Image (cartoon, rainbow, N blue to C red; front, side, top):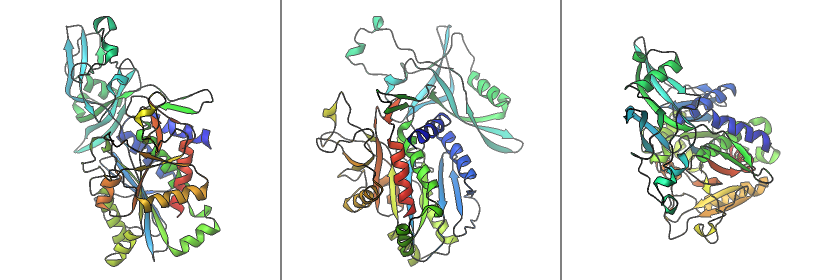
Length: 438
């Protein structure tokens, strides 16, 4: 299973250079698995036991398996994110330099490690808004060739580069497009050509730089995987694999007895914009999840006290990767909560509740791990270092249910090329399958 799921994961990531592409890939997977698309603008007709999905902004998606028995009903939810730190193309992007080069005007999206973007083959991907008759439609574009590079300044011109130097995104991080002068609109023309359109057909673009380097297995025993965008597409895919595998035909006798006590509807959520705080209409700090749950309850005629009972018995897993102990900097990790790559599910704790895990939700996760023979480890920030946050506490503020933050250990988080354990995606898939089966 390990080799197969790694191949599936890396193929998924290769096809998902942006959040828009990740959601498009998921839509195709869900359609093949028999999920029916719902539209937010239409009234939903949900039937018990059926499968559905809905998207927002083409960059967030929620999929639902509606339970069959509606007495004593609740939800098991996972939430991950579709976006990764990158450089976003600005409007009027072409900049002429010394009448010899054309570079592109960009800005940072999220907190990337800038130095890792130098001297790599890059290209452009994203969504394009196209006029088709009287309608504005979305088209996805991925320029599938080595198009751009951000060249480093030679050490001869910056002798202190290895002593640490601040990177200025407006000066140092502009990618080179051409060794000649290009007019304004060159990128639009390039994108139009990729899509077989006229320049005048394009009315808007959300384009990002993406790393062209493919995934690799490395280490003396091939125990690591290196890949762009592991944060958070590794968790997005691992939880999806478990979500899809948790069908009725695989329930054990023990699970069937548990299900007789409570019926679980499975909800898989993938949100955009986590890397910039989630405060968008399609982010975790929106009404997207609560809207979907409300519409499901309305369609299943679960309202009032029934909805409150449903939420009280529900559970949310925020699945976003965690910092593994760095081999060259073990001192950067907490003294006693130190996750390692290939060490299984990571439970994430923080007293400020930027991670939602508490004693109860940790016990739920640990119990599933123990029952399934899946290793489990803990992460906490050093008390003197401000850590990051994720979408668990944001989501649970809108849908107030017990929640835990989990992830998989990785190195070089927010680099252009990250490292994770080769065994961990399979652990997450197995864990998620057991979780969704109840």
